[in-house]
Amino acid sequence: MQTNAHTGTRIDEVAAGIYRINTPLNIPGIPGGFNLSQYLVVDEQPLVFHTGWRRWFPFVSEAIATVIPLDRIRHVGYSHFEGDESGAMNDFLAVAPEAVPFASQVSVMTSLNDYADRPGRGLADGEEFSTGKKQWQWLYTPHVPHGWDCGILFDKTTGTLLCGDLFTQAGAETPAVTEAEILTASEAMRKPMDYYAHSRNTRAILERLAELKPKTLACQHGSAYRGDGAALLRELAAILEKENQAG
Image (cartoon, rainbow, N blue to C red; front, side, top):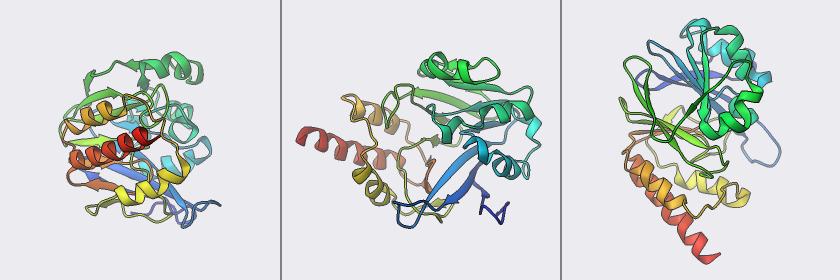
């Protein structure tokens, strides 16, 4: 459902209780444009994963408000500390007075507690918490795809992996969710830009994510993927390992 005709922002449910807020972005250097997503989890304690840039708060929050009142939000977090993931953190904390910011323990130590207007919750690797009906697990994924502080959030209830910048796809207009493979599109973005860290632990981290057997990969840029997430993660791991061996 489109929520802002000027920006093209829309909100769509991609898994049970998990909504993708997406805004297209036409920028030089990326043919066909780009896009940014935030994810809203509707539960007893609603959660927002990625806030979008600070200047995008008016239309991101506008989209969320079509589903729940903003003051109901209780958790606001991100994969790693960057403007498109955490720029509007304080704006969300202002409209949701009971919300707690969260990220990896490393990110809370290095960035969040300096930036956020309220103290953050640092999640340990493997730590679980509940938002009501949904049970979540935090996976610390340093340098995968980039950022020492990087982590990923997994909904054990629906099998949805909020996977941040993994499987980034270009395009200003992308369907909210697809069952078509997305690796080709994401590799077309990754290879020329080379924004992965190429950590020596990358394959092990991706295998750990694959073992979760995610049914939906909720990507920050591009369509969410519904299907065999484990197979896609292992295919990406094999490509990266081959590149590292060749390099």
